[in-house]
Image 1: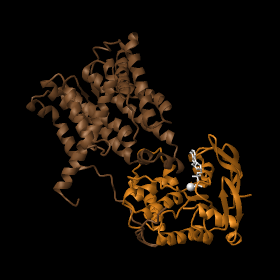
Image 2 (image 1 turned 135 degrees about the vertical axis):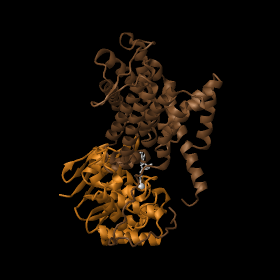
Image 3 (image 1 turned 180 degrees about the vertical axis):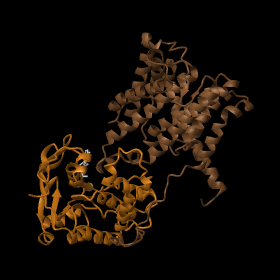
Image 4 (image 1 turned 90 degrees about the vertical axis):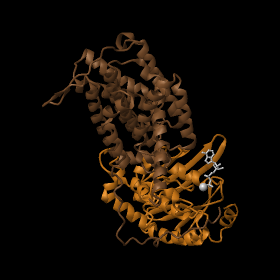
Length: 246
Length: 344
Ligand SMILES: Nc1ncnc2c1ncn2[C@@H]1O[C@H](COP(=O)(O)OP(=O)(O)O)[C@@H](O)[C@H]1O
Ligand SMILES: [Mg+2]
């Protein structure tokens, strides 16, 4: 049984059908890539899988458990973390505080209104270590909004990692990164890949094909091709899906 | 999407060997706060020297306490509760009713004010906590109006328009000593002690996990949800805490005025605390509400001595501050300090 499954997902917004019969399975320990042109429904698929939207039809299973339509906070507590295509941080908090708040050990203690968070050294050390891991050492005390674009992308990933998730969803992590940033990110994901089950939406084919074990091509809300990077390299759908990419 | 320049983040991705930087303790009391406290403690003694009266110090301290608790919602959590006078009023009535019908004991009556206001707060919070922005504001206004209306109409309990009259100021019973607060100076010292406790409590709260998470929810509620936070619960909790403090302020006000009346629950009275917080700089600063409350009450009495239309003039000052200095008096202070000591 796969760790995370989407079974015959449909999603409509009013009259507009965005997901039409999507079935996907993510095996524990694998890295899955989703690709496809803009507007294909990839982000919507993430939104349905992580609880942002309930699907119009279909089921979402985490470890065999039906999590369809559960709230994002409930799904997150089950060990599902995500990053956002449009960077989504706590902008006036420092990088450090962003990560501290993302730690489950802090979440578990949120009702404790008497503890001083700044003096919770275990949490602070853990957050600093995570920042170091994504390449933000030395930037701990900088507010998220004052970080460079690339650093903000890295912080986005640190927030997702803070939960030590069972499944990690990354929505276009290289978006807006230059060649250097993309190369650094590839190294990070290559390392994360060993520990985490990752699903990532990505337009950068070189990046995706280097890192993914399986790739699915999504178009018009459907999975139109699936396979290992090697098997898909010559696929006409892959070539075509790149045309609308940006 | 354009390939934006990506200034290299320091350190290589993935290397996690060096000793992690530890957070600097960010929770020392700021100096302005200390100065303010000293100024305040001496208030009943210097106020007459500038032509005011000691009672004013009582009211200033009560509204400081009220504004500080209110700002947990507005400034800190970004939750626009615009009917907060209701809870101030409920605290005042509960204090008065407990005193008249249960027992005349300071601690019991104050506790009644706090608890009943917190219960009313929990009731309202249950309805508003899944909202944000304008809907939150409108709902809180609606609840505030209902409370005000009930206070006026429920004559047998609240005394209607007149309110509860002849409330007393029970002695402060400390077990080993009994202090009278019949005089305004005496009452002031009690209010000041409670204000100190509330400010300290709020200070701890905003630096606690829940406090930090609420600040994060203000900035990005969606992200907080995806990190697993039960946003509804967090908003509920801070609303109850804030209304409990409003209830304490209301109970103290009932002692100050020796009565409880519906006017404090009216919409424009609810607006006053918003103005106090905004003009003081509560959106940007922890201690802004304290300054704003003092400024408001003093402006009321100083301007009010010259003109019936003091609120008009105050309103103009308020608009000027909001337009040109959204961070309020606290922001002005910060700028002055930055000019005086560049590089800090
Ligand atoms: N909340 C929404 N309401 C209405 N339409 C939406 C919503 N979210 C996404 N869509 C539409 O769904 C389509 C797919 O969007 P999206 O999933 O973001 O595509 P992708 O991530 O593959 O580029 C788009 O046409 C978009 O306009
Ligand atoms: Mg997308």
